[in-house]
Image 1 (spheres, rainbow, N blue to C red):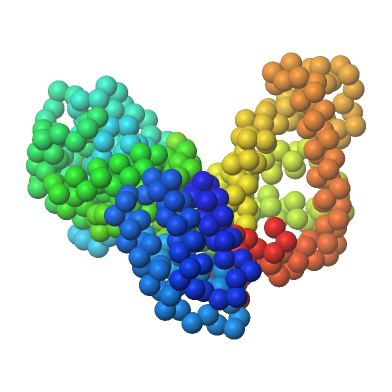
Image 2: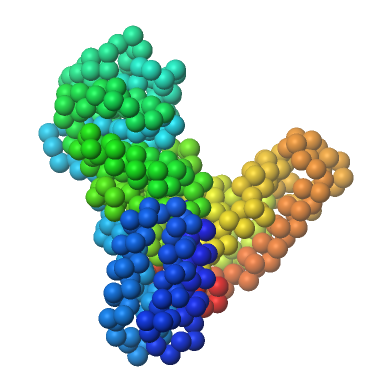
Length: 466
């Protein structure tokens, strides 16, 4: 997400590189480029106008400190205003009520409401230790109820059965009674979507809202629709007292216009970002961290949280101990590292959160590709444990068996073996104190807490050495 916006804003900020001070003339040039970058990102025009005006006022009134260059001072202002547009801090779900806390999901068809219900259910069960029930009041879309039932089973949530022959109000009433009876903490109501906003749809969801009296009414919207996402959110907000927005499919949105428009136009906070279709793909929305990512400054805090939640610590400790002792990094270790990376959202998600690497995320994915990672896993899975532990055993007949079993070519296998040897060399350098030395070197480049380094950022929003 935000690749194009990051690239364009970096170019805009370079126009101030080498300037001795901020003046109305050189700010005007940068503002023109920033305006163009925002419009190309499909940010709504009223948001762009207000943003540019606020940045201009702050920049012209700013006293540049001796530790900041004009480019760094301007970047600091742009970052603060980006955060202001999206909200000052993350707003969590409000569950402070007598159980069950009812959460009503609204949105157009195809936005990903049903998948988002499962993602939220998983998050609340795992992180908040809540008991969760889900129910579908979508009696119009074929297989909507079955889809929710399947996803509920996947995340371990209680599914309340419903039927296409029932009235949505009757379904909701019965689900609420059952949730109270079973002392459920949170009840999610998945409502019907339409291809467009219409009077019938709004009347139905208003009636359900009146009946359920939810503590949260969340609007789920496809981030790839850009400023249309904000316009649709506005239409829903007029009919329903929305409490928050969830942007889905953000991994497919390179522009980021929705994230910058929704809060400004609706006044409602973005609470989560949906990434991909897997039930693990949901992130809390932190405006300050997203502002840093937009400017190519990374999001170290979210990266650390991903590691804490998604990395198998036992396997990581085992590998670290193995490397420290100077033992060989084999193909089984390589496979486990690929699995860990996939659990964290893939290479593009990792690069997007690393300082200075957001701009290369897209090109890295196109050259390496998530499919390439799946292919490597398939090749290693087709080997015996003995072959993984000792790749030197791989002669011509073994290689033929492995490529046939994984549906790959000899060229694919040889490329994997070459990449593994390169990783082995890196791991050898980490023997003893090498890993600690590497981390110390990296630590010198990263700011404490994952924010802006002392003295601001260089033009283009990149860290030295990246």
